[in-house]
Structure formats: structure tokens, C-alpha cells
Image (cartoon, rainbow, N blue to C red; front, top):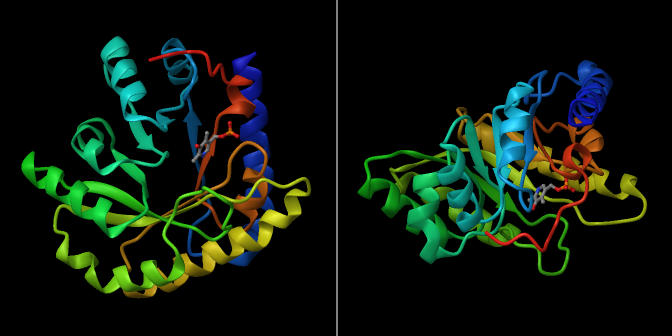
Length: 233
Ligand SMILES: *Cc1c(COP(=O)(O)O)cnc(C)c1O
């Protein structure tokens, strides 16, 4: 079941990559699949790892901590949900890549906690392009104001950008959002040539995100089925 789902997702990723191959995008010609395991029991991480997937996405610090304590930490952990400043210390201890940096305040907190333990924390800046209600992410003005200050934060390594599209009935409506994410990435790369990661796309829209330039997709439901929100960690 899981193996079949994974195979399907990987086939669709390959299909989408094929569609973009002549565009010569700066985000390269491969995609990292992050298995989003939130609201599923810890064992599914073991299952997906056994199928060769090393990238795990969680959206809550507490849940990730519980799962790492249960299983030990292997692989590469992505924090994809909104992070509260007061959880920055735990997040830095648990995650390899914090994808959801959505304010300078949070960036400063992560930088401080990383410095405390002598880590350089990989991060993505999350942009609010879709402007869906209650979706976090940096607004354009705040993002542009933050860019010149990034180098003040010595204990974070900005690896790129993260974008979440709006929910909509016609997924083609997400395409302009992902295209804007890619353009922002290209502009940022001119200033910061070492950025390399553009995280865009989830179960319902990852193919479009890849066509528009994503090189990380975050997929939960298409791999594991519906989440069980009654699970408490
Ligand atoms: C939950 C979540 C996902 C995965 O969503 P699916 O629709 O289950 O693939 C991806 N990205 C973020 C930021 C999420 O919170």
C-alpha cells in the first residue's frame, strides 16, 4: 500500500520533471521528496525509511520530539509548520532544516539558539504569496526589508525559499503562485548564489509546483492517506 503510493508519487514527480526539462531552470533537474508524517504514528517513519525515503516533514516541535524519542533520529528532518519563537530552542535541537521562517523576530530567535549550541541552522524563508487567510509567511515588504539584514545572523544558513499555495478547486490556479515563488528564488539567488532549495507543493499540487521549479515537495496524504487528528503526542 505505502510502497504503491510511493511508486505513484515518484512516477508523477518524474513526469513533472520531464515537462520542465527544457526550461533550463536554476533549481536543477531533480526533486527531493519530503514525506510529511504529521498526525501519523511514529512507525510510519520507520516504514517510509525502509522504502528509501530519508527526508521527513513534521509541523509541530512537540510531535517531532516524541517521534525522535520513540525511534531515534535518523534521516533529515524538516520543520514545515509555523514555529513560535519560544519553541526555537527545541526546533534547533530537532530539525535539520527549518522551512518556516516567517519573521525577523523568529529568525533572530533561531540564530540565538543555534549560536548557543554551536550549530549553523539551515533555514528557508517562507513567503506568503497566496495570501490565503491565516497562512503564515513573510509578506513582500517584510521579506524585502529582511534581505539586507540576513548576514547579521551568523548562525543561520539561508538555503532558499518555501511557498504554500492556496487551496482551490481548480489546481491550475496555484500555478501563478508557484511561478512567483520561482521568480523570487531566481532574484534571491542573484544576491546569494549559494541558495539551492525551493520548497513548493503538497499532495494535491506538487506536480504543478515541480513544473514551475520546485526542487523540494512536501507530500503527506498522497503517501499515507488521511491524517488522524485525534492522535495526541
Ligand atoms: C501538512 C503539510 C503538507 C502536506 O500536506 P498533504 O496535503 O497531506 O500532502 C505540506 N506542507 C505543509 C506546510 C504542511 O503543513
